[in-house]
Length: 273
Image (cartoon, rainbow, N blue to C red; front, side):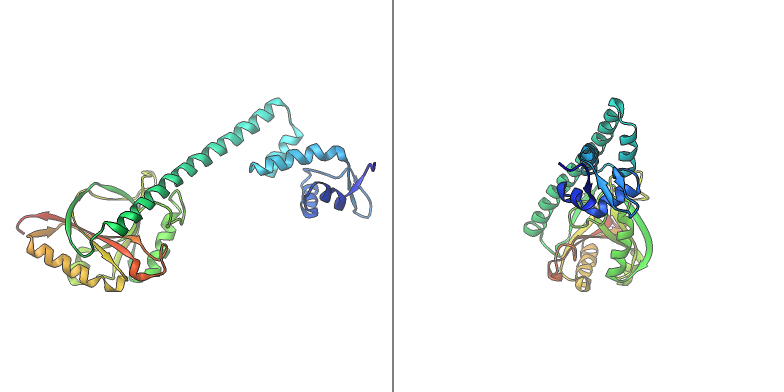
């Protein structure tokens, strides 16, 4: 049986690329047993335990720097330490996976509700609790500007950019002044609702809201706002603040604008002006 195996033979025996073996040599995590003057590398079978340890730890996501230190200083205690280290990572991953699972369940329930239960362009009153938000100011007119700002906000959320599978709400604020002037395509800020109080930089205060669901392309939303204004005038209601639009179904979920669903929330109070 051969004592030494070339880097090519060693790579085939243990199904690892030559480039990776060269990299391991370079960072001194697995050096060949023999390196000739011509640069040829040779390995022995007794190095397999080192390679097994490296591959096992890499499959668990352990960095090469930590593996290198472990191989140099391995003992029962360092083995226990690296196990604890990996258990912490796994526990964090499981927690995030469970949160994602719950978000997916809630998202599916919500989509089914929007698909089957909502009546569009029919205003109704609803008391809504306070919601913490992450917001960014800006004079916004285009849909791509909204997406860009929401992307920058999403870096502070659990599922970054995962608009399709997260239960976090995203939307825009229409100032009362723009609403009264009929300028329904100029927004003062974008926001994402959040349960992370440390990330929140704003709040949508609890209030009685006039709510209306609009379906279709945003360019046709003017009619819905006219319905809202007529309802407010007819029912002796007063608007008490800025208006919020929530994008429940948009380009992230469908290519068809006719399937878009937007919820308009207008803070109001009853009574004479």
